[in-house]
Image 1 (spheres, one colour):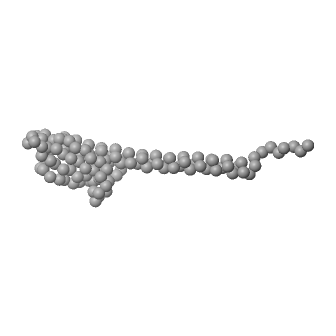
Image 2 (cartoon, one colour):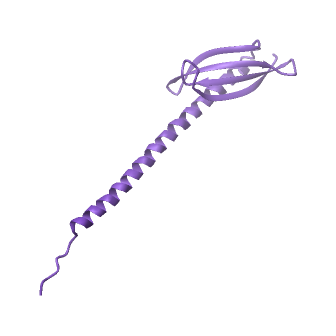
Image 3 (cartoon, helix red, strand yellow):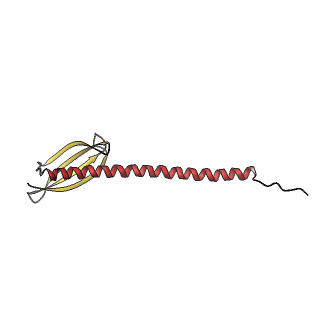
Amino acid sequence: MARAEKGFTLLEVLVALVIVATGIAATAQAMGALTGRTEALETRMLSTWVASNRLAENRFTRSWPGLGGYQGEVSQGGRTWYYREEVVATPDPDIRRLNVYVYSDEARQDQSGFLFGFLTKP
């Protein structure tokens, strides 16, 4: 009587490798997507901070900017951000709306943040 050999056949080993490789590929793809979302979230958060800081600075200095647009750049989180401020009249002559647009590129094409607030006449 012949004794049955114990162990895996080559086909069983290949099927197991395909299953493991598929799992590793799916995990790598999920990690890549997570990294991309994390970077986008960081960009959005930092650009919102830039806009918030610009509003706070305008309020703190009690400035009364003229109507129109202003541009500048600022460093935040180890990156350079470019902003455009737009001062708009409101129905109350003692209040102005300040729109702050934040961009990650100097050409101001890639808007990454926006915030608005109101300034009162000093």
